[in-house]
Amino acid sequence: MQLGKSNKGTNMSGNRVVVTGLGLITPVGLNLEENWTSIINGRSGIRRIEHFDVSDLSCQIAGLVTDFDASQYIEKKEIKRIDPFIQFALAASSQAMEDAGLTITDENAHRVAVVVGSGMGGLQTFELGKEILHDKGPSRISPFHLPSTIANLATGRIAIRYGAKGPNFCIVTACSAGTHSIGHGYRLIRHGYADAVISGGTEACVTRLSLAGFCAMRALTKQNDPPEEACRPFDKDRDGFIMGEGAGVLILEEYKAARKRGAPIYGEIIGYGESGDAYHIAAPSPDGEGALLCMNLTLRDAGLDPSQIEYINAHGTSTPYNDYIETLAIKALFKDHARRLAISSTKSMTGHLIGATGAVEAIYTLMALKTGIIPPTINYQKPDPECDLDYVPNQAREQAIEIAMSNSFGFGGTNSALIFKKC
Image 1 (cartoon, helix red, strand yellow):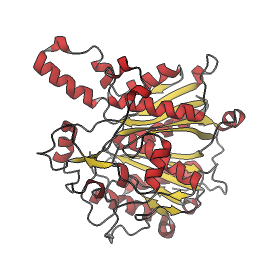
Image 2: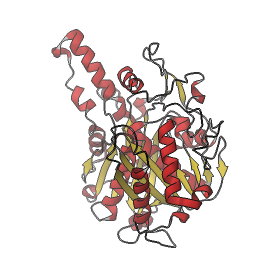
Image 3: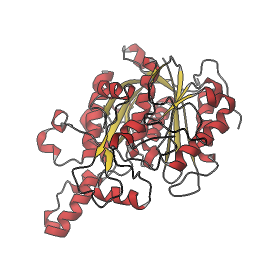
C-alpha cells in the first residue's frame, strides 16, 4: 500500500480537527489532573473486587473507579435511574465541556454531534433487572430499566443535557469503541457534517457475570496478589488482561472556529484508520495483518511516512498473544524505525476499560504531546524475546514529541487507530 507523505503531517483534504476539551473518570483519577498525575507517576488503579463475591473466580481484581460522587454531575433523584456507564459518561462530558468552554445555542445546536461508544452498555442494570424479575416478578421492573441498559443512551442523555442536535450515535465495537467514536467524530467535522463533536467512550461492566465470562474464555489474569502488579504488558510473565471501568470524553472542533473563539487546543487529529481481521471472534490474526493494515491506513490518512511517528500508546492488553501480535505488526510496518519508537501501555495502570479504553488512551496520548512526558509501562520486569521494542519500562520519560499514534484492537477482529499532532 502506497503511503502519502507530508513534511508537516497535516492532511489538508478537508477541515482540520482539533481537541479543545478533555474529561476523565477512571480507576486512577476522577478528572484530568488526577489521571495525568497518576499515569506519569506509575500509580495503578487495579485493586481487589469487594462489591460482589469473587471467591470462586480465577480473576478477583479489576481497575475500579473509587470515590466517584455522581451527585456532582446528576440530580440525586435521577442517579438511581441511570446505569453507572451513563453516569460516567455524563461526568466526563461535563468536565470536557467545561474545559473546552463550548456553548451550544439555538444557532449552532444542529452542528454539534455526539458520538460516544460502549462495548457492553448498562450491564449492571441488566443483571440487577434479571434478579428482580426472578425474585419479585415483572411488576417490579422499573420503567427506567431499558433506558439504562441500551448502549446509545449515554449519547442520548449527553445530547439532551446540552441540546446537541447534530448526528447522535453510539459505536459498539468492544475494545475499539472509544477510538472508533473519536475517529468518526473527526470525520464528521473533516467532511463538513458538524462543527463540533462530543466524542469518546464509557464502560461500567465489572460485574460477576462479565468477570465469569471472561474467566471462562481464559482471557483474564490469574495473578491476583498484589493487584497493582498483575497487569504487565509485554512482560514475559504476562498471562491475561484485567477488566476496568470509566469514561473518557473529548471535545472535537473545527480548527478555525476553535481558534476564533480562543478555545484551548490540546492537539490536532491528523489521521484515522480502521480495519477488520476477519479471522476469529476473540484472537487477532496470527500474522498481525489486521493491526498492520489499520496502522498503515491511519498513516496514509495523515499523509505521513512511518518514520514521522515518535510515540505509540499501544493496545497492550497484557495477554500473551495480543502483545506479541501488536509488536509483530509494529515491526512489520515501521521496520528499522520500530526500535526508535517509544511505546507504552497505560493499561498497566488502569486495566482494560473495554469500550472506554480507546478514548481514555487517546487523552493520555494528547497529554504526552502537550507535556513532553511519555507514560510508562509499569510492571515490566522480565523482557520477552518476542516483545523486544522500547516499551518505556516502569518510569515515565521526558521527551518532546510532535506526532503520536494510539491503537485499539477489539473482539471480532475490529481495529482502529488515531494519529495526533502537537498544535
